[in-house]
Length: 233
Image (tube, rainbow, N blue to C red; front, side, top):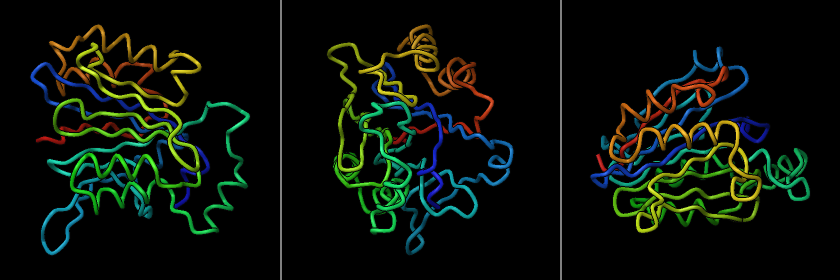
């Protein structure tokens, strides 16, 4: 259940359609994709017979890496693998924090999906709660410019990228490195080029899937699954 603290890879994208609908997609990648695909399932979590949230789960793992609160928000988590070597935590530090009782990022996400009803609540929890690993928390909401990528270290958020329609930022792409620092290349650059090619006018679930997430190198050998959210729907 602490498998993420040992390493993973992903691509996540938030986009605002021309009609204002916020959509959120992700490819979840992991080295042993074949075995992981066989233990992947879609779950609905309920309390007292009422649905609380939905998630893409792996058999035997109780934390959440990909989930949505209907009419509230959606979350995906990416590995922050390529940040500054001076600040990147060692595996020993991750394990020490786990032993000290800090929650894994996947359990913080599950807490947000369980206990938060809106984007702002989830934003504050994912932004501020200590976690025993680095990572990116990608959060989408239901209205306005509710969309953010939070670059996390162990004790908080070191950088935020938000949707900003007034300044032409209608989508956010996040892979596994600090694009604001190291630049957007590889899968990031490919995804950005694909998003620009589709354009906001033609952005939809179908085009996000077929023209972005299913195009190499965004679609990778280790891609386990693709998930699409529209939290307002």
